[in-house]
Length: 189
Image (cartoon, rainbow, N blue to C red; front, top):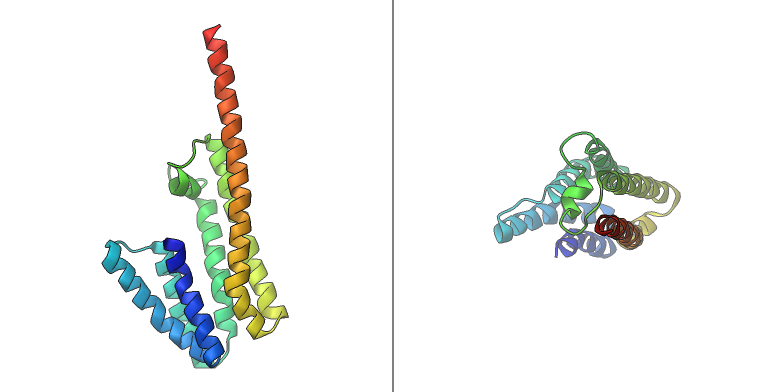
C-alpha cells in the first residue's frame, strides 16, 4: 500500500507535465504531496518520515524551480533524497543498535549482524547508484525522457534491486539454516 501511495505523486506529476509543462507539473506536485501526506496521516495517525522528507524536498526545490523558472532544481530532488538515504543507511551501520535495513526487515528475516550490515551496504550502494543515474538522465537526455524515467526507470531499478535483494536474502537464510543444521547434528552426536 505504501508503495502505491509513494507513486501517486509521480503519476500526478507526469499527467500534469503532459497536460501542460514542467512548471505546471511542479506546482501540481507541490500541491498534491502535502495533501497526500495529510490524507495518509488522517488514515493511519502516523507520518511516514520518508514521504515527509520527500515532500519537504519537493516544496523547497519546487519553489526554486518555479521562482527561477529552471527545472534543474527539480531534477536534483531524486538525487538529493536518494543520497540522503545512502548517508542515513551508512550511518546506521555505527549509530543505533541495528542498521536501518534490519529495522525495516528484521521480522521478515533472521540474519547475523555481519549479514545485516552487508545488506544495509547493498541499500547504500543502490541509493548512490539511483541518485547518480538520475543525474545522468537529467543532464544527458530530454526533459520529457527524464519525466518518464522518474516513473518507469526508477521503478524499474527498484524492482531489479528488490529481486536481487530477495535472491541474496534467500541464499543467506538458506546458508544460515544449513549452518544451524550442522550445529544441531554435531550436538546430537
